[in-house]
Amino acid sequence: MTSTGSPADRLAAVRDRLSSRTSRRRFLRVAGTTGYGLGLASLLGVDEFLAADEGEVPVVTALVREDRSDPSSLTSRTRAVPADWYARVSKAFALHEQVAARSITGLLGSAVRPGSYDRGTATLAVEVRPEDADQVGEALEMLLAGEEVTIESVRRHPPEDASGEPRLAGALGGGPVPGGVRCRTGDRVATLGPALYRDGSAYFTTAEHAYGEGATVGDPLSLPRRDAGTVEIGRVRHVHPAVDVVAVSPTGGFEPESAIDGATPSRVIGQLTRFGLADLAARGEPLEKVGAQTGHTTGEILGIDAVTCVTGDCRRGQLQWGTETDLTDGDSGSAAYYPTEEGLLIAGFNNARTWWPGQNHLWGVAAYHLTETHGYHF
Image (cartoon, rainbow, N blue to C red; front, side, top):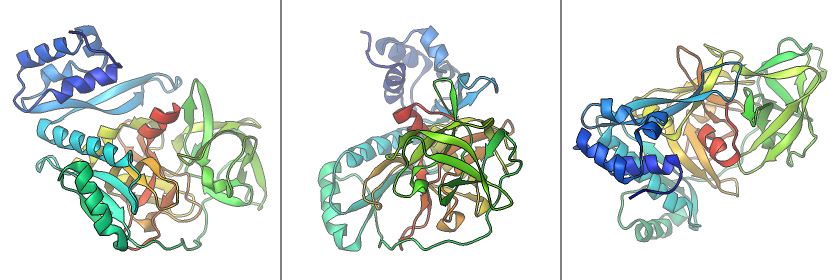
C-alpha cells in the first residue's frame, strides 16, 4: 500500500504510528506501509529514526541556510525528542486546529503550551472575557469531548502611548541594512526586520499596521537621519494584513541584510519550525529580540500555534512569548530569535504586546506560519 500526499504528510503518518515502544523492525514496516523509500527518508532526515534511542523520535527543529550567499540553500536540522512528549504535543496541535477552525463566540485567543520533556505534557489554553467563560467552556467541552483545556479570563483595554529614546540606524549612504533598527512608515515609526526572502528576491520588512490605516503597494519605507531627516530605502511590494507583514523592495542602493543590529551573534542563518519552538519551550530556552525602542530583551516561550482575536479579526499562527514590557510602540516589526553558535534562528515577527489585564506577553506571526501561508523565509 502506498500513501498519497506531500512528503511532510507521509512523514507525519510515520510519526503518528510510532510510540515509545516502537522497535527498529517496526519502524521499517511502518515506513513501508506509508509509502516511504529509504531515499526519501534520507532526504527528510528520517534516517535519524534508526539512530534514535528507544522512546525517542526526531523532529525537524529548524531550516538553516548553509550557504550565506544563497537564500535558497535551506537544509533541515533535526533533534531527537521523547516519543511520549511528541505524541502529547502533536495531539495538542491537532485539538487546537479544531478550536481555531470554529467561530466560538466569546473566544479571544488560544495557544498550545508544550510542557517540559520530563513531564511529557502539553496544554491547550484559551482566553475569554469573564462573562463568556461558561458559554465558551460548554462549547469547548462539546467540541473536544472532555479533553482538558485551560480557560483564562481577560479584560480588554486600549493600548497606552509609549515613549522612550529610539535606536537610530547607522550609516545611511546605501549598502546593506540589518534588522533591529528604527524605520519610518510615513509619519510613524517601527522596527526593521532582518532580510526576508521569497522566490530568490530579498525584501526589507516591517509590521503592516505600522502604516496606520494600512499599507498599499508603493508606500515608502525610510530610515531616520541623525539630522531629523529621512532617507528612503524601499517601496512596499507586497502587503499581507492577515499576518501583519509587508515585503518592501529595496531602492537607492540599499540592501536587506540577514542580520540583526545589537544581537549576539548578529547574523541570521534561518528559522525555527513549529516543533523547534516546542523543543525550546520544553527545554526552558528563552527567545530574544532587539527593538528600536526597547532594545535587547529576553523572555520565555508561552504559546505556540496561537490564535489572537482581541484586535477584531482572528490571526492564526501566532507566537506568544516574553512580557508586555519587552515591547512598546516603535518596536513593531522586530524579530524574535534564538541565538546559536552558528547564528540566529528567527522564531517570529513581533507585532504587538498585550494591553489587557489577565495576559502578559508579546505576540506576532511565527516564522513557520509566514512560510506556510506566503512562502517567505528568513
